[in-house]
Amino acid sequence: MVGGNAGKEAWNMAGGENITWDCLSCSYRHDPSIGAPDDGIPPGTPFEDLSGDWTCPECSAFKGNFTATASPARAPH
Image 1: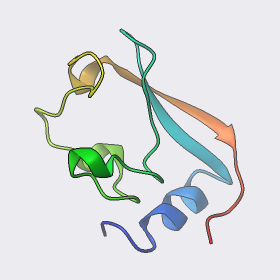
Image 2: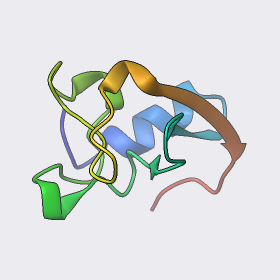
Image 3: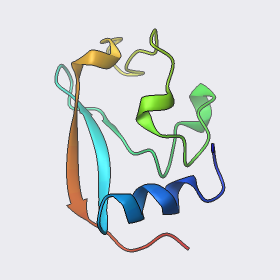
């Protein structure tokens, strides 16, 4: 599911942690709960669902150049 409850489901599956994805080239942080609306990625879109040719909006690094980071978070509303 994209949008809607997807962010809440990801939060629950992460055991109450917010998973963000950090670019190893430029430190851009992609937060799936926020998405990247300017790039056509709605909030709640899981990182895994981004197309294989998606690149960092800051430095154009490939998706494989990102690493997952978990941090405590509040449950989405």
